[in-house]
Image (cartoon, rainbow over all chains, first blue to last red; front, top):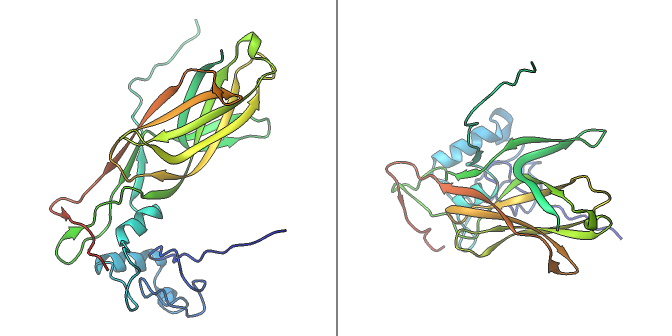
Length: 96
Length: 159
């Protein structure tokens, strides 16, 4: 038996509980993006930057309890980077 | 007792047709930089249980002793928070030492806990029948939170 579970995540603000897929003029209740309209002339990245610049406000009615836009973005990997130490030395070996 | 020769976290491990692994982008530090601010110039703290959906992998290599050959063992991997508690990143992989050559493991992980700042310990050891049969090796990994200059961190108002 197989069960497929689809989770609709907003590609703009990464709200993880969209009631519908992000298309067909559905609107994200979190960032207010209307898919098929707002994202025609602006990319998801541009819409995301605009939402962040406007203060990451919840769009439709009241946000879920304890909703935290920073945590939502970080959970999706936005603003998370990794680094490593540089090689402390580099040597070449010549075979005599 | 088998000896751990290497444990390395990285972004990805590529294995070619002959089974030869290549490690992509080794890393030791994760930086979390919350984007944006409220109208009052404040930002919210990163919640302690935040896990970013990052894909990463751990490469490890074990050198068996002659009497380890033929044994089926489990490699345990866990990521410990700076406060010493174990994060949700914990897993086991079973394998058998088929000969005296080093045995390589790859563990792919989705999610990296970033809720606490400081030094995380990536701990690796071997178990057999539920008992630890190797030393515990710890690899230090750092998590830092970068707060934009001039901003204050205040809790998110309850909604």
